[in-house]
Length: 225
Image 1 (cartoon, rainbow, N blue to C red):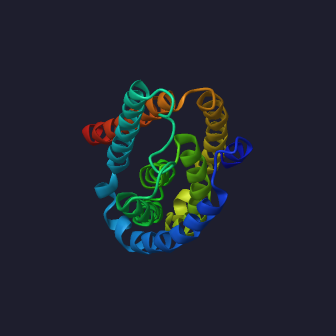
Image 2 (cartoon, rainbow, N blue to C red):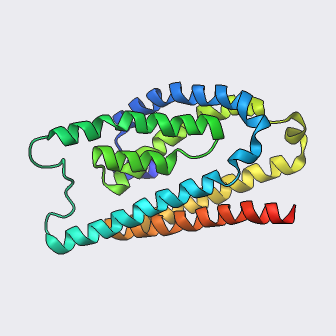
């Protein structure tokens, strides 16, 4: 997805790499805590990713509704962000400074849980730096690539030895990678053909659906057990 974003010029490489380096500090902290905390508290984290996904999905739906309202008020300039024109206000300065705590929070989660990052990074880039959605997701994918690659090295040592020896483990890896690549190409083809408003609705709907499924699995597994 990073390469696709570069091709379409929907990525801020310099900021993405800067935030990625900053994120490594917090990923390390997350891995350190996860090594001692997660093995004895696995039930605490089941389903948490689902709720987080639902919240992120709601954000994109609200963003899409806001875009629709802006378009109705001013159909010519609604695509411009608030920071794109005029002098920078104190409010916008404060908002920009919050991007670092936001990146730190998402990076810590990547190191602690081994999940997340991508859409969370995109949300903070949109909220704090007023990135358009395609540029935000493109830059977030670069940050996610760096974050998850680094986190995987540390989290790898937390995997029980027996699990690594199962043939099913090695069969799932290429399957997941292949489906991820397929989804990336299909998703990018659709996303780059839609308006920003429709992209917000599309992402929001899919993320909320994924969150609902993940949450439902939590309670279903509890019922079965």
